[in-house]
Figure 1 (cartoon, rainbow, N blue to C red):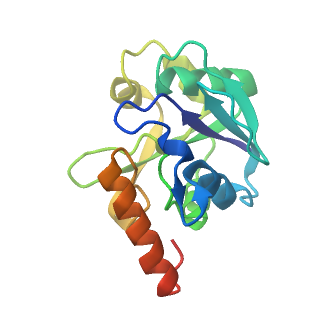
Figure 2: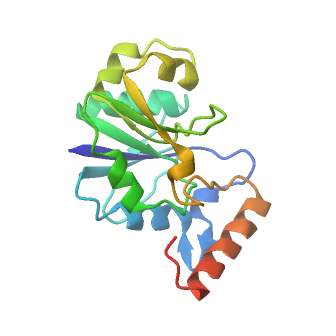
Length: 187
């Protein structure tokens, strides 16, 4: 079993972005709805700097505000299970593709990587073996050393890694949502 972890930090560019609406739902609710039926997930944890109440989740208040690597390591330690880290600003995730990432041996972390080498560390599975590598300075330094496999990010659905950081991103997300809704595509 795996813990789904959605960190919600203080957004510098777009205030309260996780709570903005797309198609009548808050972004964070869209994400939780999409992953709620993934049978591999034992629990969905929201690690937030502010109190949040969302159905089917557990909340941990982030009092240290040291970033996603610190949050990941804390949750790995608390639950002693593998953790799927999922950014709270990616509304177009695919439960089907997340499930495909969960079938690898549990000792390995599974991280999408683009052909140009860019990683998607905020949409990845982290093994509890990562706790042996917790002294690294940054997320990318940490990933260099952990036992892992990379999946080709190009093989994921088109908008899987689209995240919302600006007002323009939010408008694009609304456009993507309504385009796909009117064409009966699943996003």
